[in-house]
Amino acid sequence: MPTKYVVILGSLMSGLGKGVVTASILKTLDFYGYNAIPIKFDGYLNYDCGTMNPYRHGEVFVLDDKGEVDMDFGIYERFLNKNMTSDLSITGGKLFGSIINKERRGEFLGTDVQIIPHLTNEAISKIKEVEEKRKPDVIIIEVGGTVGDIENSYFIEAVRQLAIKESAVFINLTYAPKMDVVGEQKTKPAQLGFRMLLQAGIQPNFVICRSKDLLKKNTIEKLALFSNISDDKVIDDSDLNSMYLLPLHFINQNFDKMLINELKLEQKSIDNKKLDNWKEKLRILEKPDKEVTIGVVGKYTELKDAYASINESFVHSGISNNTKVNIKWIEATDIEEKGTDTLKELDGVLVPGGFGKRGIEGMIQAIKYSRENKVPYLGICLGMQLMAVEYARNVCGLSEANSIEFNKNTKNPIITLMESQKNIYNLGGTMRLGEWRCLLTQGTKTHSAYNNKIISERHRHRYEFNNEYRKLLEEHGLQVAGTTEDNGLIEFIEWKDQFGVGTQAHPELKSRLEEPAPIFVAFVNSALEFSTTKNKN
Image (cartoon, rainbow, N blue to C red):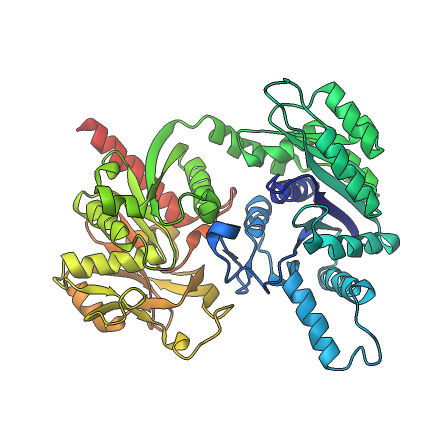
């Protein structure tokens, strides 16, 4: 059976959650056993997300194959429990770059190169390459941005053309605001969005509507009327306690069966074992038996999307421990200005990755506080590097220890630039990226967490632990818990007498609802033990 297509377009405004809707549809089809994969289009002219500021675009999600992609790919992986690949990410930069390269090679010789047909054909060819390579039952295309944006207009035209020859279902995600003064859900903005979509030559098969409360009957009727569909094709996407509930919410509205019929897929029965497993995870999420509070001391805490994978890793590891994890977001510069009092009520401290000097000393203060007060600690990437710096300063007596990222002239460069990075001048796609294997040291907390000798985690960094200081720090009690297989790079370090683990990797990037990150599970468990002991005392 030929591959079928679902195209999801957002109208009215950004930030409605197309990624969650896309992932929920993927998961719904997965419950039935269909092989469904996503493609994400982003209109920016960057080649990928690698050089983007987290304040502008949220976290950069890294794939096994070294791809730096939009954070929505993290949502896809967390729902499907499958690894995504870079070819599923199509950006304006990739498309325009490909067209210019073809023009320079003479492939359009004698032709004036235009948006239509050349750029739209290029977009379609990228989509068809995925189809031919993977041969899935369904490809779900999430079109980034909003209908009416110049940045995605050519891609919308491309999927319109694609639907002429292929079996495609269009879904419009919109929004019905509720004005406090009026007290009713307003559909006029959505109606204007429908007009723009119709002007682009696309008739939606379904409308999914975001709202604070369940859609009212008259709201559904208006949305159906102005989008030329029947009332049952308007799907409620009102606020839920967890995004992981959305696939079940869709199923409760019969959206799963309607979509399968619309796509003319081979009829299958839902896999109740898969569905029940998902429901059980959500049951624990909604009513856990225990509770802990963990502080995340970072430098982008004003924008939670910058730490989306860390937030979700705590959801997953909390479920695994039957525990609600309350996250306290702490700006590192606040610790520099006000001290560590804000850490006193915590059951654990995490310092995440990041770049640049701002807030570094606040993070080091938080690490020192955790070590001295035996508060469970997890350091990720930068958090591992600063864990080594703090140990060198306050245990080994190297008061000027630092990373050369922050002080190029430091007398004690505990963290240094990787050899492979020293002659690199282009920033995009040049870090140590993607999946790397690691050899764990038996008898360590890290080895116990993973219960495996060889593991693999994803990376994104330019700096590393300086091996010239390895012997000194080990002599003072720091435990090397994991290295690359050739023992060349340190991947995990630990404090011996308490739960304090630092990893150069980003284990949060591989955490899923159905397979939580092992080191996060161990961290939350340690925080539970610490909380219990603290409360007894």
